[in-house]
Length: 316
Image (cartoon, rainbow, N blue to C red; front, top):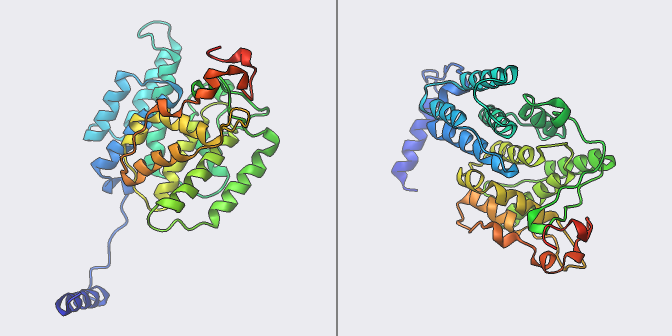
Protein backbone atom coordinates (compact mmCIF):
# COMPACT_ATOMS: atom_id res chain seq x y z
CA UNK A 1 0.00 0.00 0.00
CA UNK A 2 1.45 3.43 -0.96
CA UNK A 3 1.72 6.40 1.40
CA UNK A 4 -1.12 8.32 -0.30
CA UNK A 5 -3.56 5.44 0.30
CA UNK A 6 -2.41 5.16 3.91
CA UNK A 7 -2.97 8.88 4.49
CA UNK A 8 -6.43 8.74 2.92
CA UNK A 9 -7.39 5.82 5.16
CA UNK A 10 -6.21 7.71 8.24
CA UNK A 11 -8.13 10.83 7.18
CA UNK A 12 -11.26 8.72 6.74
CA UNK A 13 -10.83 7.13 10.17
CA UNK A 14 -10.39 10.56 11.80
CA UNK A 15 -13.51 11.88 10.06
CA UNK A 16 -15.62 8.91 11.14
CA UNK A 17 -14.45 9.11 14.75
CA UNK A 18 -14.99 12.86 15.29
CA UNK A 19 -17.99 14.33 17.02
CA UNK A 20 -19.02 15.86 13.68
CA UNK A 21 -19.41 12.48 11.98
CA UNK A 22 -22.86 11.46 10.82
CA UNK A 23 -23.16 8.46 13.17
CA UNK A 24 -26.89 8.82 13.73
CA UNK A 25 -28.34 6.31 11.28
CA UNK A 26 -31.90 5.28 11.97
CA UNK A 27 -33.07 1.69 12.39
CA UNK A 28 -35.04 0.62 9.34
CA UNK A 29 -36.77 -2.67 8.44
CA UNK A 30 -34.40 -5.14 6.80
CA UNK A 31 -36.91 -5.42 3.96
CA UNK A 32 -36.09 -1.83 2.99
CA UNK A 33 -32.62 -2.98 1.94
CA UNK A 34 -33.58 -6.25 0.26
CA UNK A 35 -32.01 -6.59 -3.17
CA UNK A 36 -33.82 -7.77 -6.28
CA UNK A 37 -31.18 -10.51 -6.53
CA UNK A 38 -32.17 -11.82 -3.08
CA UNK A 39 -35.87 -11.77 -3.99
CA UNK A 40 -35.13 -13.85 -7.05
CA UNK A 41 -32.86 -16.22 -5.14
CA UNK A 42 -35.34 -17.00 -2.37
CA UNK A 43 -38.10 -17.89 -4.79
CA UNK A 44 -35.82 -19.85 -7.12
CA UNK A 45 -34.73 -22.05 -4.21
CA UNK A 46 -38.25 -22.32 -2.78
CA UNK A 47 -39.76 -23.47 -6.08
CA UNK A 48 -36.82 -25.65 -7.10
CA UNK A 49 -36.82 -27.57 -3.82
CA UNK A 50 -40.26 -29.03 -4.53
CA UNK A 51 -38.63 -31.31 -7.11
CA UNK A 52 -36.97 -33.14 -4.19
CA UNK A 53 -40.28 -34.98 -3.76
CA UNK A 54 -41.32 -34.87 -7.41
CA UNK A 55 -43.66 -31.88 -6.90
CA UNK A 56 -44.35 -28.99 -9.24
CA UNK A 57 -45.80 -25.59 -8.35
CA UNK A 58 -48.76 -24.10 -10.17
CA UNK A 59 -48.62 -21.33 -12.81
CA UNK A 60 -50.51 -19.15 -10.32
CA UNK A 61 -47.76 -19.47 -7.70
CA UNK A 62 -45.16 -18.62 -10.34
CA UNK A 63 -47.12 -15.48 -11.22
CA UNK A 64 -47.21 -14.44 -7.56
CA UNK A 65 -43.48 -15.07 -7.20
CA UNK A 66 -42.79 -12.95 -10.28
CA UNK A 67 -45.00 -10.22 -8.84
CA UNK A 68 -42.99 -10.24 -5.64
CA UNK A 69 -39.69 -10.07 -7.53
CA UNK A 70 -40.87 -7.05 -9.52
CA UNK A 71 -42.30 -5.29 -6.48
CA UNK A 72 -45.97 -5.71 -7.42
CA UNK A 73 -46.62 -7.69 -4.23
CA UNK A 74 -45.03 -7.87 -0.83
CA UNK A 75 -44.18 -11.30 0.55
CA UNK A 76 -47.05 -10.98 3.02
CA UNK A 77 -49.41 -10.32 0.13
CA UNK A 78 -48.27 -13.33 -1.89
CA UNK A 79 -48.77 -15.44 1.24
CA UNK A 80 -52.28 -14.13 1.79
CA UNK A 81 -53.19 -14.68 -1.85
CA UNK A 82 -51.91 -18.26 -2.16
CA UNK A 83 -53.38 -19.34 1.17
CA UNK A 84 -56.73 -17.74 0.34
CA UNK A 85 -56.66 -19.47 -3.03
CA UNK A 86 -56.36 -22.88 -1.41
CA UNK A 87 -58.77 -22.08 1.41
CA UNK A 88 -61.40 -21.51 -1.26
CA UNK A 89 -60.38 -24.69 -3.05
CA UNK A 90 -60.70 -26.73 0.13
CA UNK A 91 -64.14 -25.32 0.95
CA UNK A 92 -65.63 -26.03 -2.46
CA UNK A 93 -65.72 -28.92 -4.89
CA UNK A 94 -66.34 -26.50 -7.75
CA UNK A 95 -63.93 -24.35 -9.67
CA UNK A 96 -60.34 -25.15 -10.50
CA UNK A 97 -59.41 -28.75 -9.79
CA UNK A 98 -55.93 -28.70 -8.30
CA UNK A 99 -54.33 -31.87 -7.02
CA UNK A 100 -52.97 -32.13 -3.50
CA UNK A 101 -49.36 -32.36 -4.64
CA UNK A 102 -49.61 -28.99 -6.39
CA UNK A 103 -51.23 -27.47 -3.31
CA UNK A 104 -48.39 -28.81 -1.16
CA UNK A 105 -45.76 -27.45 -3.54
CA UNK A 106 -47.38 -23.99 -3.64
CA UNK A 107 -47.96 -23.61 0.09
CA UNK A 108 -44.54 -24.95 1.10
CA UNK A 109 -42.77 -22.82 -1.53
CA UNK A 110 -44.36 -19.71 -0.06
CA UNK A 111 -43.25 -20.69 3.45
CA UNK A 112 -39.70 -21.44 2.27
CA UNK A 113 -39.49 -18.01 0.63
CA UNK A 114 -40.69 -16.43 3.87
CA UNK A 115 -38.10 -18.26 5.96
CA UNK A 116 -35.21 -17.54 3.61
CA UNK A 117 -36.18 -13.87 3.57
CA UNK A 118 -36.45 -13.59 7.36
CA UNK A 119 -33.36 -15.82 7.79
CA UNK A 120 -33.92 -16.84 11.43
CA UNK A 121 -31.21 -19.15 12.71
CA UNK A 122 -29.85 -20.52 15.98
CA UNK A 123 -27.40 -23.41 16.12
CA UNK A 124 -29.64 -25.48 18.35
CA UNK A 125 -31.55 -28.77 17.86
CA UNK A 126 -34.87 -26.96 18.28
CA UNK A 127 -34.30 -25.04 15.07
CA UNK A 128 -34.99 -28.15 12.95
CA UNK A 129 -38.43 -28.65 14.51
CA UNK A 130 -39.13 -24.94 14.13
CA UNK A 131 -38.24 -25.01 10.42
CA UNK A 132 -40.33 -28.13 9.77
CA UNK A 133 -43.28 -26.72 11.70
CA UNK A 134 -43.14 -23.47 9.75
CA UNK A 135 -42.85 -25.10 6.32
CA UNK A 136 -45.73 -27.55 6.73
CA UNK A 137 -48.11 -25.60 8.95
CA UNK A 138 -50.66 -25.10 6.14
CA UNK A 139 -51.03 -28.82 5.36
CA UNK A 140 -52.94 -31.70 6.93
CA UNK A 141 -51.46 -32.17 10.44
CA UNK A 142 -52.48 -35.84 10.44
CA UNK A 143 -50.19 -36.42 7.44
CA UNK A 144 -47.32 -33.99 7.95
CA UNK A 145 -47.25 -33.67 11.78
CA UNK A 146 -45.51 -30.24 11.62
CA UNK A 147 -42.53 -30.06 13.95
CA UNK A 148 -43.20 -33.48 15.50
CA UNK A 149 -40.77 -36.42 15.49
CA UNK A 150 -41.78 -39.84 14.20
CA UNK A 151 -42.41 -42.61 16.69
CA UNK A 152 -41.12 -45.42 14.49
CA UNK A 153 -38.36 -45.85 11.94
CA UNK A 154 -39.53 -45.49 8.35
CA UNK A 155 -38.27 -46.96 5.08
CA UNK A 156 -38.19 -45.06 1.80
CA UNK A 157 -37.29 -46.82 -1.43
CA UNK A 158 -34.79 -45.05 -3.66
CA UNK A 159 -34.57 -45.25 -7.44
CA UNK A 160 -30.78 -45.11 -7.51
CA UNK A 161 -30.65 -48.07 -5.09
CA UNK A 162 -33.05 -50.21 -7.15
CA UNK A 163 -35.61 -49.87 -4.38
CA UNK A 164 -33.34 -50.29 -1.37
CA UNK A 165 -33.43 -47.72 1.42
CA UNK A 166 -30.98 -45.78 3.53
CA UNK A 167 -31.01 -47.00 7.13
CA UNK A 168 -32.44 -43.98 8.95
CA UNK A 169 -31.99 -43.37 12.65
CA UNK A 170 -34.28 -45.06 15.15
CA UNK A 171 -36.57 -42.68 17.10
CA UNK A 172 -34.80 -43.69 20.31
CA UNK A 173 -31.63 -42.11 18.90
CA UNK A 174 -33.11 -38.84 17.56
CA UNK A 175 -32.31 -36.58 20.48
CA UNK A 176 -28.85 -38.08 21.06
CA UNK A 177 -27.96 -37.80 17.35
CA UNK A 178 -29.15 -34.21 17.16
CA UNK A 179 -27.16 -33.26 20.24
CA UNK A 180 -24.10 -34.91 18.70
CA UNK A 181 -24.47 -32.91 15.48
CA UNK A 182 -25.07 -29.52 17.08
CA UNK A 183 -22.40 -29.95 19.76
CA UNK A 184 -19.90 -30.84 17.04
CA UNK A 185 -20.88 -27.85 14.87
CA UNK A 186 -20.47 -25.40 17.74
CA UNK A 187 -16.81 -26.43 17.98
CA UNK A 188 -16.07 -25.76 14.31
CA UNK A 189 -14.70 -22.66 12.63
CA UNK A 190 -15.32 -22.77 8.89
CA UNK A 191 -13.40 -19.57 8.23
CA UNK A 192 -14.23 -17.29 5.32
CA UNK A 193 -14.12 -19.81 2.47
CA UNK A 194 -15.64 -23.28 2.31
CA UNK A 195 -13.23 -25.33 0.26
CA UNK A 196 -11.34 -28.63 0.49
CA UNK A 197 -11.35 -30.06 4.05
CA UNK A 198 -13.70 -27.39 5.42
CA UNK A 199 -16.23 -28.02 2.65
CA UNK A 200 -16.03 -31.78 3.14
CA UNK A 201 -16.54 -31.39 6.89
CA UNK A 202 -19.63 -29.23 6.37
CA UNK A 203 -21.09 -31.60 3.77
CA UNK A 204 -20.54 -34.77 5.78
CA UNK A 205 -22.18 -33.12 8.78
CA UNK A 206 -25.23 -32.13 6.71
CA UNK A 207 -25.50 -35.70 5.41
CA UNK A 208 -25.34 -37.05 8.97
CA UNK A 209 -28.09 -34.65 10.02
CA UNK A 210 -30.26 -35.70 7.07
CA UNK A 211 -29.88 -39.40 7.89
CA UNK A 212 -31.50 -38.84 11.28
CA UNK A 213 -34.71 -38.22 9.30
CA UNK A 214 -36.87 -37.47 12.34
CA UNK A 215 -40.01 -36.15 10.62
CA UNK A 216 -42.91 -37.98 9.00
CA UNK A 217 -42.61 -36.03 5.73
CA UNK A 218 -40.46 -33.24 4.32
CA UNK A 219 -37.08 -34.16 5.85
CA UNK A 220 -35.01 -33.28 2.78
CA UNK A 221 -36.67 -29.90 2.23
CA UNK A 222 -36.21 -29.13 5.92
CA UNK A 223 -32.50 -29.98 5.77
CA UNK A 224 -32.05 -27.99 2.56
CA UNK A 225 -33.61 -24.90 4.15
CA UNK A 226 -31.57 -25.47 7.31
CA UNK A 227 -28.35 -25.61 5.31
CA UNK A 228 -29.24 -22.38 3.45
CA UNK A 229 -29.98 -20.59 6.72
CA UNK A 230 -26.81 -21.99 8.31
CA UNK A 231 -24.63 -20.88 5.41
CA UNK A 232 -26.18 -17.42 5.53
CA UNK A 233 -25.53 -17.35 9.29
CA UNK A 234 -21.88 -18.21 8.58
CA UNK A 235 -21.65 -15.27 6.18
CA UNK A 236 -21.62 -17.15 2.86
CA UNK A 237 -23.58 -16.31 -0.27
CA UNK A 238 -24.94 -19.15 -2.34
CA UNK A 239 -25.91 -19.64 -5.96
CA UNK A 240 -29.50 -20.13 -7.17
CA UNK A 241 -28.77 -22.81 -9.72
CA UNK A 242 -28.07 -26.01 -7.74
CA UNK A 243 -31.30 -26.02 -5.73
CA UNK A 244 -33.27 -24.48 -8.57
CA UNK A 245 -32.23 -27.01 -11.20
CA UNK A 246 -30.78 -30.03 -9.37
CA UNK A 247 -32.96 -30.71 -6.33
CA UNK A 248 -33.54 -34.36 -7.25
CA UNK A 249 -29.79 -34.78 -7.60
CA UNK A 250 -29.43 -33.23 -4.14
CA UNK A 251 -31.61 -35.89 -2.53
CA UNK A 252 -29.85 -38.69 -4.41
CA UNK A 253 -26.47 -37.28 -3.37
CA UNK A 254 -27.60 -37.37 0.26
CA UNK A 255 -28.59 -41.00 -0.25
CA UNK A 256 -25.18 -41.91 -1.68
CA UNK A 257 -23.43 -40.05 1.13
CA UNK A 258 -25.16 -42.19 3.77
CA UNK A 259 -25.85 -45.58 2.11
CA UNK A 260 -23.49 -48.46 2.73
CA UNK A 261 -23.75 -52.06 1.63
CA UNK A 262 -20.70 -54.26 2.23
CA UNK A 263 -21.95 -57.25 0.22
CA UNK A 264 -22.49 -55.02 -2.82
CA UNK A 265 -19.15 -53.27 -2.18
CA UNK A 266 -20.90 -49.90 -1.86
CA UNK A 267 -19.48 -47.52 0.72
CA UNK A 268 -20.68 -44.10 1.78
CA UNK A 269 -19.65 -41.70 -0.97
CA UNK A 270 -19.95 -37.98 -0.20
CA UNK A 271 -18.20 -36.68 -3.32
CA UNK A 272 -21.49 -36.06 -5.18
CA UNK A 273 -22.85 -33.98 -2.32
CA UNK A 274 -19.53 -32.16 -2.07
CA UNK A 275 -19.79 -31.29 -5.78
CA UNK A 276 -23.32 -29.95 -5.21
CA UNK A 277 -22.27 -27.66 -2.36
CA UNK A 278 -19.09 -26.66 -4.18
CA UNK A 279 -21.27 -25.43 -7.04
CA UNK A 280 -23.63 -23.80 -4.54
CA UNK A 281 -20.88 -21.89 -2.76
CA UNK A 282 -18.03 -21.55 -5.22
CA UNK A 283 -19.60 -21.84 -8.71
CA UNK A 284 -17.24 -24.77 -9.23
CA UNK A 285 -18.93 -26.03 -12.39
CA UNK A 286 -19.18 -29.72 -11.46
CA UNK A 287 -21.51 -31.74 -13.66
CA UNK A 288 -24.54 -32.81 -11.59
CA UNK A 289 -26.12 -35.78 -13.37
CA UNK A 290 -28.44 -38.16 -11.51
CA UNK A 291 -27.28 -41.06 -13.66
CA UNK A 292 -23.85 -40.84 -12.04
CA UNK A 293 -25.33 -41.72 -8.66
CA UNK A 294 -26.94 -45.03 -9.68
CA UNK A 295 -25.62 -48.05 -7.77
CA UNK A 296 -25.27 -50.46 -10.69
CA UNK A 297 -24.47 -53.48 -8.52
CA UNK A 298 -27.97 -53.42 -7.04
CA UNK A 299 -29.52 -53.56 -10.51
CA UNK A 300 -27.19 -56.28 -11.76
CA UNK A 301 -27.95 -58.44 -8.71
CA UNK A 302 -31.09 -57.43 -6.74
CA UNK A 303 -30.32 -60.09 -4.13
CA UNK A 304 -27.73 -57.64 -2.83
CA UNK A 305 -30.37 -55.25 -1.51
CA UNK A 306 -29.54 -54.75 2.17
CA UNK A 307 -32.43 -53.04 3.97
CA UNK A 308 -35.30 -54.44 1.92
CA UNK A 309 -36.08 -57.82 0.43
CA UNK A 310 -34.95 -58.54 -3.16
CA UNK A 311 -38.65 -59.02 -3.85
CA UNK A 312 -39.05 -55.26 -3.32
CA UNK A 313 -36.48 -54.39 -6.00
CA UNK A 314 -37.73 -51.97 -8.63
CA UNK A 315 -36.06 -54.00 -11.37
CA UNK A 316 -35.77 -57.72 -10.62
